[in-house]
Amino acid sequence: MEASDTLEIDVKGARALLEADAVLVDVRRQDEWDFSRIAGAHHVPQEELLARIGDVAPPESKLVVYCAHGNRSLFAAAALKQAGYEAVSLAGGLAAWMQAGQPVEAPEDLDEAQRKRYSRHVLIPEVGLAGQRRLLEASVLVVGAGGLGSPALLYLAAAGIGRLGFVDDDEVDASNLQRQVLHSTDAVGEPKVKSAEQRIRGLNPDVEPVGYQERLTAESVDRILGDGWEVVVDGADNFPTRYLLNDAAVWHGVPVVHGSIFRFEGQLTVFAPGGPCYRCLFPTPPPPELAPSCAEGGVLGVLPGVIGSLQGAETLKLVLEIGDPLIGRLLLFDALAGSFTEVAVPRDPACPICGDEPTITEYVDYVEFCGGAR
Image 1 (tube, helix red, strand yellow):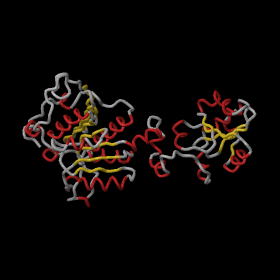
Image 2 (image 1 turned 90 degrees about the horizontal axis):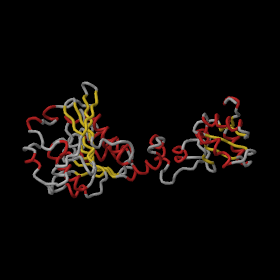
Image 3 (image 1 turned 120 degrees about the vertical axis):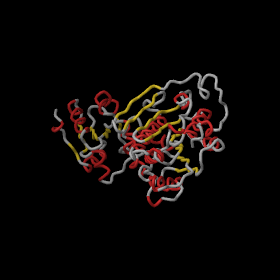
Image 4 (image 1 turned 90 degrees about the vertical axis):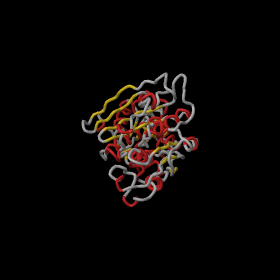
């Protein structure tokens, strides 16, 4: 039987059948069912329908079948009729039911505004309702609220990271605005931490912004990392902070999503407990004259948007424990060529921090270690 031969029924007709003891069947995916459903419905995904419908209702039962918009349920009802059931499809599906003002069941731990805000996350099987709850419970720290920190913070806040920290001792300057999209012209002269907090609160009220208006130093890093961060995003723009953060993260057992940018090139990797770490990749820093900052050498404005957004993606993967994070792999991006290249980053057994026999067990003078570069 073709789907076009199957009888559809509107919301009013469906209610009448249900009041006359028809069986209501939801044929959507598990993630859709978890998000919201009509009260009293039996969940039998479409691909399992004919194999499992006998567990829900005997062949003489009258069935009202629905999906999101009435397309899948139309074919499901046709298959059920062919199998001997008296089945009809709810025209317009759950959307029509809700538009008619009929009630639906929804998880108690997501309110109506959250269900709407995160609906595109919940539709992803790898995220789903449980994943979104996990994001809302997560704590992520971003070091630097500048070029890399801007897109990372914006996307992590939009994703619903429940507790989002950021460390920066700088103020917003007009020269930042070409690439640091977290900040606005009105924020020029304000501390970046204050500007970031205002932007994050305005973007997502579910997120608790935690600002540290200070420089990450050997004196402050243990206190800051001790505030319970699950993942740290490295958006630092200087080598002393990168080495300091690496050493502290290894000793605290916290993964770091590292990114760096210069002119048209960017790189990205993840340093997780067990190695490799930043020192495995760069055992010693380059001489200051070979490592100019963005202020000295410039950077294409969109480049931190690319790398910072990828840092956000890697962070979400770590929090949700999905996919294949860039652990032991360095991703290189060339904006001029429009190309990505990946190289392996092995753990160094002789690494002084994460190696088999560490030789550095306390913080050092990182400015001196980096040849005076700040």
